[in-house]
Length: 278
Image (cartoon, helix red, strand yellow):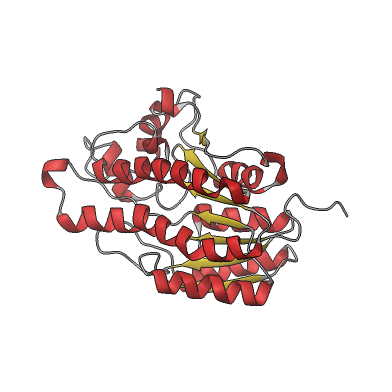
């Protein structure tokens, strides 16, 4: 059996119950990593689509275990630094270390700026920006104590490079991640801890494939469905596709987690079908 590209490593992944997070967990496990999976598994009032459930997290657990790797799962909120620190500590105790951090948890919502509620802005910044900060702070003591370097991968967005109407809060958070990443990369480079961002275009997950998103893209229709929105999704990209698959992003995560990228840090990697240059 060929040794995996991250064999013997441990990855801490937030937002791991479904979508991109589950895909990242499975892809890294396929290549030999053990997983610490963290997810809220509950709804957020300002998010206009159903959030993951405990049953979704169980599916992730089963999918990782099918690869033959170990997984420690914790339900918690990235807005809670203590919960994140406890999850990391538990995972390290059970799995023996920490090498990779994938700060993936995030939400989306939509509103013209003039109508955006204070709660909508606060939830977005608290989860998509501060939640990533909390994740990094929870993981850093373990990475530094181990003294063997590591890789922190922050999932941003093409909206962290450019932006669109109705997502001022989302774009602010995702642009902020890039600045945070560059500062952390400078601080942590002497410890061989690399920090990079990944910037996906639209990804085929529940965050995108829902009625609220279809209505955003087709406000001219009373009850738009997926097929109605596909031309609008496609118009975002240079390549003639409506979205990429979660595994496309996971392959980038795997590359940045592996020694193949051992000298790549402070980089913003678009996996966006050209949407950043649209």
